[in-house]
Length: 254
Image (cartoon, rainbow, N blue to C red; front, side, top):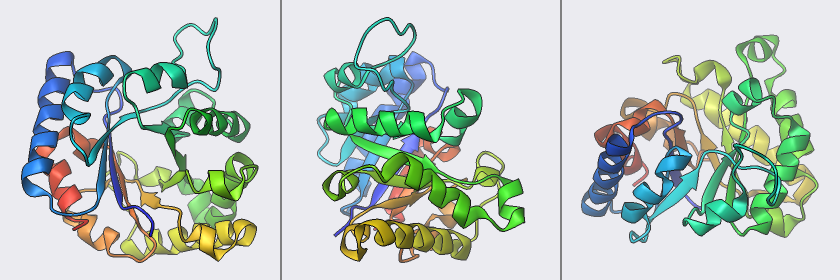
């Protein structure tokens, strides 16, 4: 049975004090209010990982995540963070290939394939992001576009390694815009991606892969989105910066 996951991506937000308050609030509220088997991942900025980890790591159902990593093991890569460094502070999930990284840092499918390999080798779970722009969506080629992202970054993996990957579908046109794909649009894309995985690895393997939706997930739309058969949770941006909103989204998985 595939995992239900809600991951909060704080992006480049929160001071040290804000991060500690937010992290502790989320963990305490999850402990007090959430009665489900959904996994919660919190991905703060790198400099807050140890601070937030103090609250996250003791909780059995909340996990520490990172927003990115290098594909290199170590060395002269100023400003980069290796899987080993992240592992040493308790990180168990790493977000890879977010559309903002693809756009602003020029990350290619080839680079992301190498990052996926590094994360899996470090026994950390990659959350692999994929998604299309409004231009691609309006052209009607979104399924081919996103399927290619999976093919070029994931299809070199063995079936056993693929099952260690979490996929996050994020329609770029719905990130930070307030727009959200309809629940049916999300389901259609998630089903198409699962079918693409099945074409390469078989239906049994595809059925084990968690596919999250990322794109302006809010308490108001979370329950309907998560009610779709192929939507296994969410990668939450803005709403993860408000503990009440984020935990209400987590509770929508119950």
